Length: 463
Image (tube, rainbow, N blue to C red; front, side):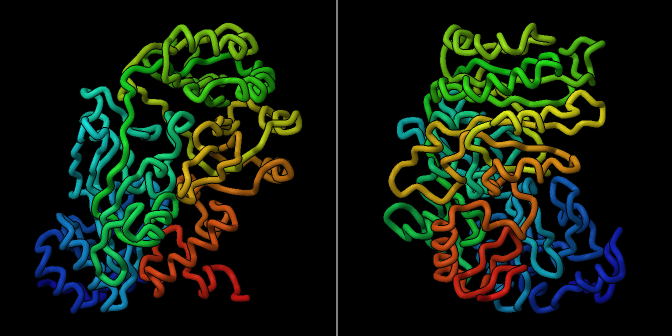
């Protein structure tokens, strides 16, 4: 085994290289099990393996372990625990917010199996599976998962963080459809969590993120959805205030089958957009209706009346598997019970300027607000709307603060110091108690962390 004591990682600083010096015993143990699926600093493949999908952080782990099965996962967890090394899990790299420095970074992307049981309408997936794989397996059977805005997103991280998608108003959060999770605990035990076995852990997994165990398989419900009506249409940016004023009232009247968002943005430079309109500021109205086209057209008439003639009409009948709705990166996020004039005025101020950020107003409610008994801690279920802004705009957060919840959604959260805001106070207390039961030493802390009860969260002082 080659050792790289004190060797500087490619592209990193000397300080970073010092952090990535591997612990010889841990590296030797993992090398025996993983072979060339263990990557150390300076070795070919290390720099590619250590990075998340989006370059928002620059992790410098002491070693990167690629798991091919459950035994590999268990070995990595136990090794990290016994050697006192920081431990992090990364599947596809989506949503990775906290850098894995100086420890073991476990990659589960190779564990990407997808099995669909059409009779029971259930999918079972490995932790490295992406939604595109589930969609491909389910669509020919007339079934659909509660996937998100992008098919390339990993199933497990999305679901553990709550998972809000374009069928969530009809069927709830993705976390609400979880039926079973096979996991490796922080002490190395392999257990199954469901409504009957380790039910407290199962509750926490449905929205509490990767804090409680390393998932090695998930099972979740599929729904009889094959064809939908929707897409993205663009309207004049000058109608933004009128559209949002109508939207806040109109949204309260639509059935759960109708999911929508109003986005103040730029028109894309794609081939379906006329050349003169590309890059111009506009109001995009995103629609996905899990029903008939004629019913969707009827429901949309009041909103389209406020919007005026479409600059580009993108609504059509499509397979759900082909509905690429896209999302807005979250630099600012908050929930709102309603959208008063003062909020609308702030959102549309300067919206026609070339330098204006993208602002997305999304309708929540529906089944998300009516969870079944025993549903997990995902989200603030009483929210009617969310507002996302993709870039800083001076004064906007302060102006909106009196009207918002001051809360977040775990999948959209970028600031690890604000994890508590992703949950109701009662759910957060319960999550900390469950964390203390299953991971009292906070081994699984390189994430959007929930500290065990009795341990002060990062950035807080014990009371």
